[in-house]
Image 1: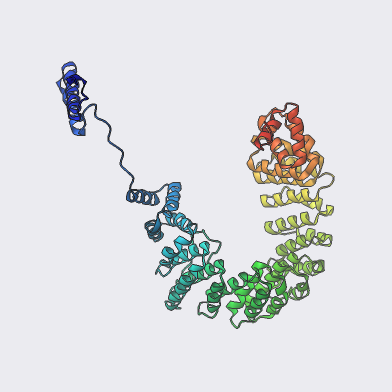
Image 2: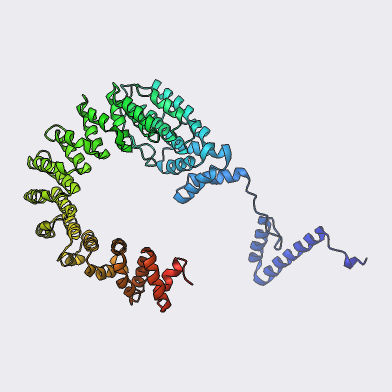
Length: 553
């Protein structure tokens, strides 16, 4: 084979490349001066590359580099990247969980929040590493760990939670300085209101976690905490035992009866909270017995719980308490029950003017909705403060008696905007002749809450004359909140609003036209039929609405 036909060796290619590089340097040196040539030569030599050598291969992302990068993002200031890194680390096995658990010990709540959330979503794999934090001396960290395990909900977390409770109970010092705590940094529905003994916080958090897990073994542990020296823990455990029994009627009855008769007032208090949470109808008699409990807090909560349950059996005993220590709570509970037998006694209690009872009485009378209360409510307006006046206006709107219209119109000029809002909405609820005219002037009010109240009131009048006004409120200039209220009102108006909405599909303002189409979509079959008919006639807003719903082309 001829020498010229041989493929060039690697050495000859590199030699040729170097020669080409020097040629470039020489040309630059001659053409642009020695100094420039020297700079070019230094750049080539400093980079270890010839002018035409290939770019270096990118660094391979080893598992160590990936972990290092994620950890850097976790401790960074970018919230989305921090949250993404926390989630990614849960997929990196034991080393990833180790980084996350170390981050949980940070004093930076902005970091702990996404870390705790990621761990709580990681499932069974996170139980073991998180459990190691349960016995930390930092009560908030231990409580956060308990919260994470409760969110995971695995029965395998019951044993470490129980051990952690025992650990912290042994460390309990009743003489320790109390602290206020809101553990979990708002991640949890549970809030511990201070002051708390520091070691109470992780114990109570563990109780709440066990309640969320709801496993039979968790209930056994909860039962064992009822007689601990920590009052708050006993309350939380009793509440949890009731809540976790709600799906078994027989177990619920036995649990409620046992706990409401427990010698500890804290246990009885917690049990009442549980009954209140599940609105246990079968517990009425047991709760009625607590109206005479020796503990003030238990009696008060029993009154409130009867209102939450809403059973009319409690009306008589609650009426008997109106003049007593818990009259305020009794009025509110009677309003929640809504029995008309309570109207006259509540009016009498309101006229006694004890401790702000007029405001709660107005609320209760509004809930009951009996027109016999209207004269008394109107009389209560004389000299009432802004808060009571607002409550009276709301009550008058709920009752819906036209005799209150004049008084409510007078409140539209009140100096407190809360009162004006309540009066406007009440006028809308009452409705009738003149309601639309009463509310129209408020649409130009400078206070956006009053304007929105007028829109809501117009929607509630049920008057067809209000419909075009509501359509006008679909404009972009009306504001997002106002548009939402107008949309809700138009949808609630039903088929009667379809003609004005179809007309609005041709509005010269494209935004209003499209919003009208969206409202028609929300109206279901009647609105869809109207859109299809308008689309067939060439209406662009109707076609756009159908396309966005996947029903057009």
